[in-house]
Length: 514
Ligand code: AHR
View (cartoon, rainbow, N blue to C red):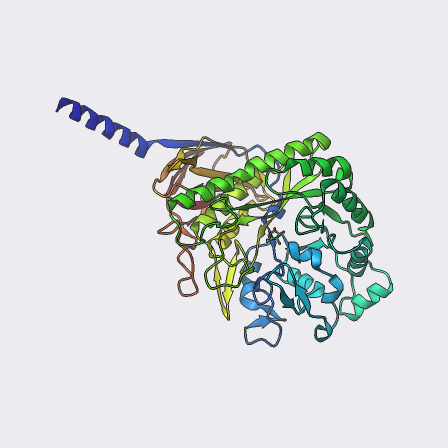
């Protein structure tokens, strides 16, 4: 009896400790850990499935409300995300693409085969001019992906001249005849995509030579300075990066990295996007965190050739890739998007922010209707996904100064997997306001956080929002679009330089302090 009583007391003490234990976080508000480049919040829109047609482009004659042929609801939603850059036309599609198919009067454009994604016809009504007008409308910078796999340096240099040269040539006259007098300023150019795979199945040595050839003929014209991104590898395949950096590093501004998070780690059965259990919830988040190892690994290889970190690691494809939704077309990569995916996004963005010395460009795949989309559409209906709201909540970090942050996270475990429960980023904007994003992925346990905001002086919490839902696999539908949306958050208080946050289970909170 005495033994039971004692163990009961012990359990009570332990439980009390768990419930009342505070996680200490220190933020140095007067120090800088570099700028969080806004371009890590970039998007990717490929001619794939229903991503462009009809996710973005429906044409001027459509019954779906549109602005110059672009869905008005999608435009408005994207405008609100302050998207810094958007990558187009692929992906694997890019290395089959001839830019000339997408210019001139739309009714005269050829219908080509989208051979990689579903072998469906592409009417090319969304071409170069339409893409660049789209970037204007959403106030993003274009990031063009050049065909290296099935094209020539000449085809690419003609595109550069057509777009960016200010003088009179046959190509620029053609541009003018197609409605654009002034040249565009276009900074980001990706030279090949997955050139080791769908972009030509090349060896690293062969691609490095190809890259040098293409990069040479991608010229800066009329004051437009190109930022050349070489096609990098997948996951932890560091040998490719090594060869590229050794042979061609001097000719590049960035080298890409692609990494998709699979819930199961199995490409043949990736796991569903809805209705999954805690096993796949935690395995997805654990797999997402591998991004940090890959960023560190590639960066280390790059350091050998570029210790000053001039060359950027551009994670220009990332996100969760699940089994396609039942009833959707094969090869269209349509999936739902849950609270789990929101946390995958927030924890990945925290990794990019933390490694802001190398990662200054990144693109989530993909903007509308494909993979980890911001937006889903069906006919004239549109819904914003939980991931959309993460990008909205993280806007505060765009081009802000990262503040050094120390966090020793408690664990979250399920089955034989253990991951950190907490992830965070703190930054200071130009106006001096400080924003902190805090994610607690533990679906059962809230955490009390004690943040020391060293050097803060006197300030107040000026805004506080939370993204959470009943379940970790909750999602938004056309009928119930507000299941996972940010709400005002009341669980934070600031006394002097001490910020206390009661961070609920499975939640993301953004706080701004002025
Ligand atoms: O985003 C879907 C595809 O994934 C891209 O086209 C390709 O680059 C990657 O393999």
